[in-house]
Length: 193
Image 1 (cartoon, rainbow, N blue to C red):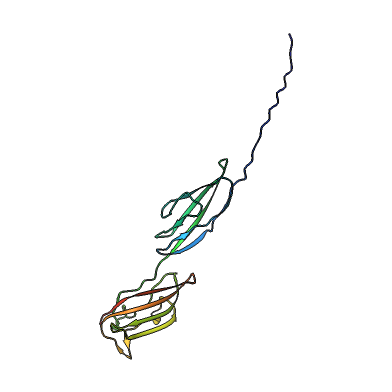
Image 2 (cartoon, helix red, strand yellow):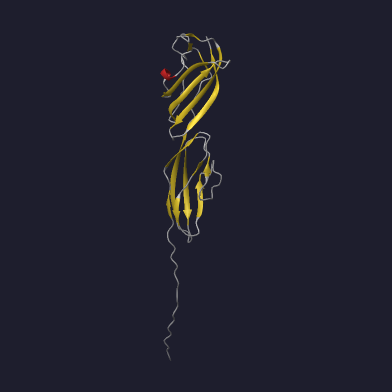
């Protein structure tokens, strides 16, 4: 019997791909009705993106989706690189609600709806300018640089020291928002006696 020793050599090439890296801003804010682009910071090779939930996104499979959420929402991004390695991160979008501007008030001294003023959540930092005009265009009230949610910064229904006539008036509000921008609102208010 003859035994031979056989030596096999094989060459194995191992390619190591870097693990994907992902970082999301964890606290974003958008004004009600507005759109925000979510901008993750990432690194990797041949990356795929999956955003969940896909609600209110323009696409759930792109790097920088745009979201128009009606309410607060948390998104999770799963980033998968070549070789199947994945990482996850989340971001929370806080929806800042628009200010509430009533459509009528009754300044009759009963302690209910006696003032016309801006009611706001955390969206409005200041009421930069607040003007009210009669239906003939005469300015009947003006105040500037006041805080929202304070009836002292609103109209009490008086004009030149006397009760203004019942009827419809036009208001113009210039609001300073918490993000540093301003917004102008125009509308009608009914004064009831």
